[in-house]
Length: 379
Length: 143
Image (cartoon, rainbow over all chains, first blue to last red; front, top):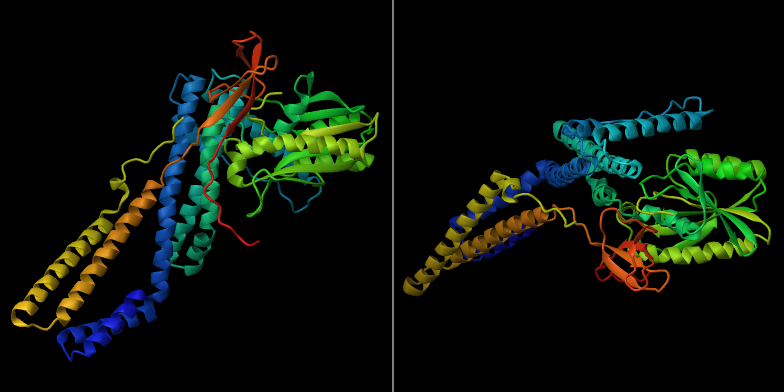
């Protein structure tokens, strides 16, 4: 548009000097550009969009390749495999999980749980075969690393699919859709890219803020296994008994907090005054990183199986549920723990203690569950 | 622990784009030379300056566009790296309160007991692992 205006200006100026050949050339050039824009404007816009997607695709390809490289190198370094694990890693990156059929939704949660369990077992077996020298903690960390690499591979493939489809069909709407969501997709990809290193090194991540609060509460007390990959500690506080639950660290896993909470409730025959859940929550733009908020309900993400189980157990015994969350964005949630989030865990600790005092009376039993990936966090 | 940098940048710039940029640059320079010649002609024999104006404008425009494309392409490519900010580990002695902050080492985790304290010989504990990010100055919004 600026070029057209500039040409128009130049053409007008030249007209003052008389009918020179340059005036004619500029005149014709102006009309040609005008006509080209009338008929091919949309197509030009489409090529500009395609170019933008292409640039992002290059970046995604680079990130994906880096992810694969980091995964292979970490497996070689930690797992000491006898053969080159590259082929196995490539196969792992292509793994998929088919969700259960939900035409008849009754019992779909249990079907989903079963599929997720099978997937988890399969992933762990694969990692063990790739890295035979790794211990349980390292297997969990390697599994997380491979899952992040797999997510990057998937994002790359989806964007590439729409890019090529758009190029093939020259459909403005196919290209437009992908171009519009591209900034968000790139943000997520960059978040996974930084997660890769954190998982490979076993560093705590932002998502583990809830688990860290629970760890701070239970540190120094005896822990016992309560459900798959979950531990509980009995912590006395202001005359109350708190059952503090978290995923078993320091390996990267989220455990099964749904089963753990259910088990503790059943052990106490439903005599639990309240359940307090602590988790990291996605912040909205404009909110401060590490902001602490309080509410009610089961603060837990994931596919929904654990949330269902927790709500089911609470309903059975009419137990109240409180939630305390730490706000962070997707990038901070999967990358190494930010100082702001770490500092917020002390504020959450105070809030939780306050809720226990305000909502329960002496002699009551409460459950405090720290939700999130416990990578790099012991207990 | 340091961030991985991008591979060679030149191999990632399309050769066609480079060709177009350099041809535009060359033509723009030629236009500027011709414009200069026309100006010289104006002073020597009193030629019309219209051609010089147009060539000057085209030359500057061409140089501006080609430089912009080149800089923009390089800027995009320079972003091709996974930046990893340093992660710090705080090791503390619960008995005498000695505190050490060092770079994260593989195997560190929060609440891990590490080497004995140099002061009181009690086991030290990792109490924090975090990364510090220097935020750019935030844009001020009225809401």
